[in-house]
Amino acid sequence: MSVDYAERAARYWDAADRAYRDGDPAYGDELAEAAAQCEAWAHEDLTGRRAG
Image 1 (cartoon, one colour):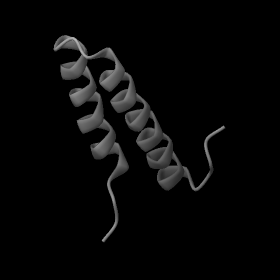
Image 2 (cartoon, one colour):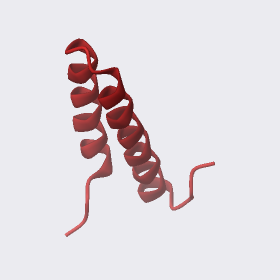
Image 3 (tube, one colour):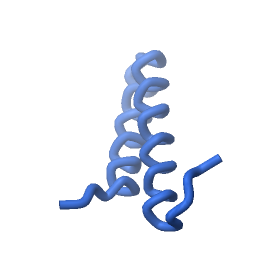
Image 4 (spheres, one colour):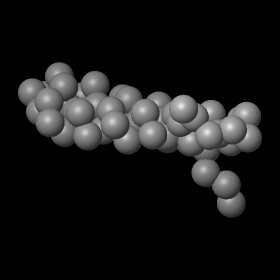
């Protein structure tokens, strides 16, 4: 089973937005960092190249 990193990134972005709205910027930052990492992995899966 493969992981859909783009889908996972979208879920992390949504959760980060909720954390920011709920007044928890530290948790929002943590979730945003996870989302960005998932986006990098999705790019690698799509292109076969490691992101920058």
